[in-house]
Image (cartoon, rainbow, N blue to C red; front, side):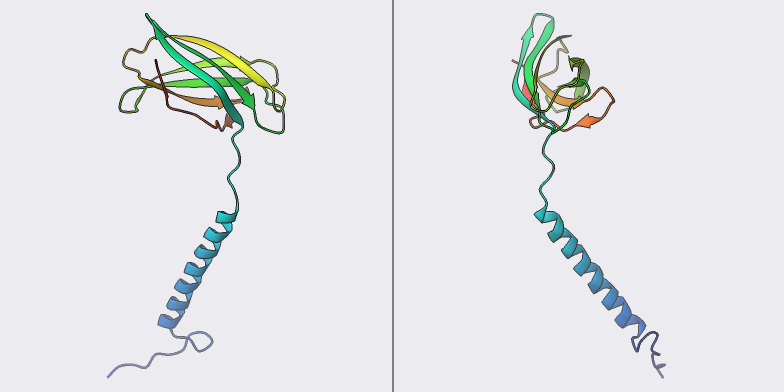
Length: 147
């Protein structure tokens, strides 16, 4: 003979409570996804206006211009170049300083960097941070082809 289920809380049995909790969980996640869908991601803090990467005998030369897209000053600006192998693996990482002084909103900065040629590298990818080490989103991080 089967034992009768006893109500646990407000007349609900264990199985009914589990189903109700699962339904609430699903509804909550759907609502959260809809809420996130309406929000646009934050815009990148740094815009790449120009970038040229050339290979010369024994060296790779990177020239470009970037702009501060934030509404506030950036305390200094460092760019990092990840030299990538054909499969996308990082071979080398180099750094250059674009601005020692704060870059005001909308201000542009240019850079010229030269590195020893990482022979197997075919692309570079950019990253940026301010002088305090705060990561900055770049609008077009690459990869850029080494010509």
